Image (cartoon, rainbow, N blue to C red; front, side, top):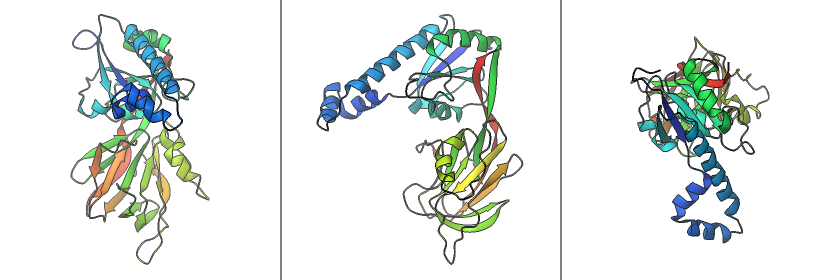
Length: 302
């Protein structure tokens, strides 16, 4: 129980493809016309939306009436104030869990797979019909928790950003990112497509596609290991820029440092959320390492 008596459940969602289409085009009819004019059918997209609504309804019914609950769309996460004892229920695909994890400070997260036919369920492991039991077990402390490592980027002015999958440092457009890099692997000046620093959770995503292109890829860390890996994308060799320090691991007691040489457009963001970013302009230094915060993922009833 919380200090206020009743537990609070925060249900996090993101728009379905159908909801996004209707929002973009104004009405169902206009969205339908847009797709049909291009030889596509809105029926399958709408059917998936209906299934999601059924799952969301089941989750809402699973929350005891005497408990407090609130629903938070993904777009409002950066403005929402979480309470220390909140139980967070992420209803959607695996990617929704990293979206919410960066705003948490130890709150327990229950991932609910809203579409098992299309989602692997690596992070959203629970079926809708099991939510009630998992909620009660979570409040009672009778669940298994997986503490997943997160990455943190901190600027020299104190601003910080954390991520569950990866942190990207680079230019906000397709221009080259220019910076100085320093790690245990060495130091040099770069012109590249940016740097990805990934956790073990993110090692199977964007970082994996970068690693597959390497002749000797850096070993990916395990999801709960206090180790990160970094990859420089398409480093350009020139008289002023090098390509020797383009990948490596960052242990818990180590840090990767980058100093921007971009007059404008330099950014740092986590888990693909570009709207919630740090500016990384000329002279700004960022230090990236293992975050003190970890995702507390509820995996099963103990």
